[in-house]
Length: 216
Length: 216
DNA sequence: CCTATGTGAACGAGCGCTCAATCATACTTT
DNA sequence: AAAGTATGATTGAGCGCTCGTTCACATAGG
Image 1 (cartoon, helix red, strand yellow):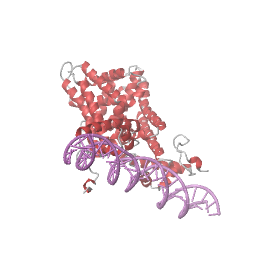
Image 2 (cartoon, helix red, strand yellow):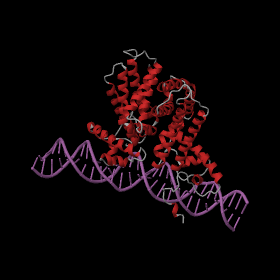
Image 3 (cartoon, each protein chain N blue to C red):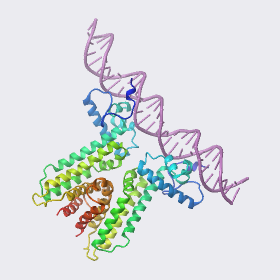
Image 4 (cartoon, rainbow over the protein chains, first blue to last red):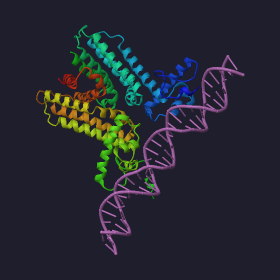
């Protein structure tokens, strides 16, 4: 009767725990577990973080942990997903009031770079950790990554042709979108080195000129 | 009597194996082991690659493997070091005949991007794997990474003021150096996506304009 | 008393690494 | 040339241990 749980290949898409009935409880606890896990993953990395550490940090026993999360891999997926949602939300908020204009693009970039600065550890974590996901979920995470780039791309497209903006080729728009994402992440990766020479704002300003140069 | 071998903290700096006498043999075999390992790490990742797999791939028994390499971590360090040396050499070769000129910088960038394309798997590996090194060696690897950026920086400094080049501020030179490295690596990370829109040459051409824009 | 939830000892697969034993080859001795 | 010896190189069974996961049982609430 319990045999049908045996195979490791879980049925449904991402997140399938066990037998607790109250769904609100599950959501809340799971959220709590994810938060604790993120911190642990950031400080110790995925492999050196044991499930026992996670349980302890979240204030559960290992047994309970497995009531809310079906495997360590599963948890990793949830972590990745959550981080991306966070980054994406932060970026979208920062873009909420944009209308096509040089100064606006500059502000968008500066805000995005600020997000990258605030979430630098999370960004590094994502880079380190995606590899440990099953291939199937890796794709999904990669897609989320590209979603963020897409936000810039659509923003640029909206600006294209309006106000002081020239009409932009698709190719260029795409590349600029990628460049913005990547140069933001570059700050996360190399900030210890870059900070010796620039503040975040200076960095943002120069890179903005850089990016605008490609457009105009 | 054999007790003095006990502590895991190895004495010397990086690479210390065991009791085989012929040093040429050691060098050659170790090189061979590293090569086999790189392939395995790229396809399976660090943790899923077992020492037994490495031994098998290199054509040794595990016992023999440990005659040439003192630990799996050690091997990881050697792998990182070797890759960086390779990248660095490739970049330096590509830069061998540079004199200050727009066209030359363009060629330098295109060549570097080609290196990134050829060694894309290696570059990804480096990003994934550095975290598993002991802190002490992590720094060293990070330094190697920055060395490559420095190559660009010094190249740019040599160009500064000569021929058609303006005299460049230090800050700008540094940032441009970083941008070149990072935009090359961006190709490695996102090439599956970018290839839909650009060939490597097109990518290099546009990004070069981009970079030149910051200089002129 | 029954259902929902929480617990942590126990399990066992898998790992890096060691080391006593064996083999191969070169050098000595007669 | 044959037998003896010394030494470097190779082997793989197995040790010690970690860690993800499970499950028989405890506790709480209604």
